[in-house]
Image 1: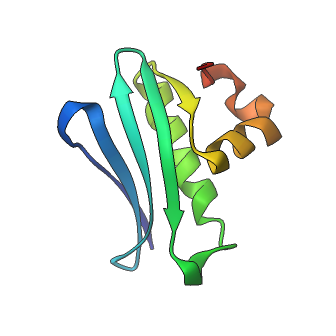
Image 2: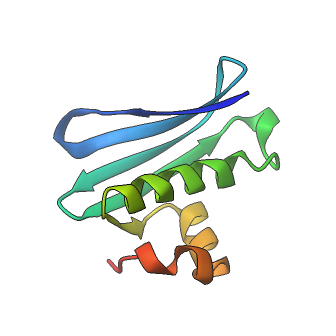
Length: 97
């Protein structure tokens, strides 16, 4: 079973973790400032790559951004690729640098 958790850190730097059956398989670092969420880095375990878990994290972070009226700056290459590939899904929350 998949579970997403947000871990809040200091100075707006936080991360979302993706756990499957109680084991962390991925995480995305974020930096949140007023009105903006910077998606910094996405990491998926080597044995879980090509599993769709990166997309699960992107969707969780974009859902969070929408719920909190935030725009996302996709600093992570994977997030930028997803935003470019699916503008109809993510265009409403994309912010430019």
